Length: 328
Image 1: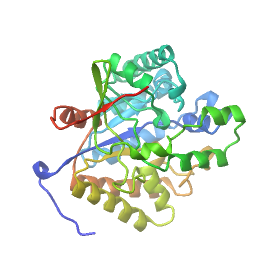
Image 2: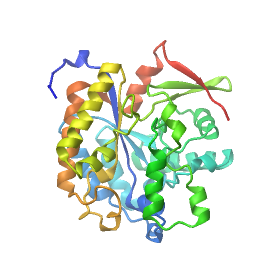
Image 3: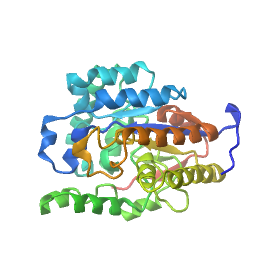
Image 4: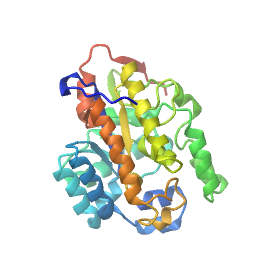
């Protein structure tokens, strides 16, 4: 694809975030009892992430799990992120992708405890939230608004959620009760009909800004880096062309992309052998970082890349923001 350069002022906005899911969180979703010892790779992966971002002078939003912030052996890695000037968001307390089943009281406790641990470890009080597994409910959104959050970033407007859920069911050992609890993991088919651009939830004489994770316009298939990495397992050239085409499509259609990273985008199978069941873990960490950095270069070339919070502040001030009524 032809490359073009733009001055900073002429570039449309985009945002970049990373869900700092730890090793134990993946094992927990996979129903592996080893998760209960909270194995962590943060001391390995965080320096890799920060180095790739620093090379491009990028500041992003890192959504942190409260349980990781509560454990002292993760504190230095989390402090490094904060010292580097990145926004810290809330990614729940225990990374349970069934927050839609939580009561209002339980959600209040979940958020409050996560906020306390994250603030203690990073010095930042989160004002942005992303639910694990894109878990979201009307009750959760109301609780976020009441607690003073500036935005939610849990919406993934894609039809592919049930396919991803089927993969998890096929590769794990789940009983009927566990399957019922996970029956909305990664969302439903109708999520593909949600708005692709930011919008404002309206409810109870208040509102909350939604910053959706961008999917490929029109087709609504994922373009976050974990999906790109899955394609790279077949062909790195195919993966790069796919990502670049998605970015150009966003630019042409006026979509300011919200691109999502995960730690496994920087880790190979040799780094975390227990997670070899995860897609693309046949690649080495070095190979994955090369893919990520090419994608970051494409973003920087086409967009003015900001943390989610900065992007959200600009969006919230616009007069043409779409309002969506929140239904229970």
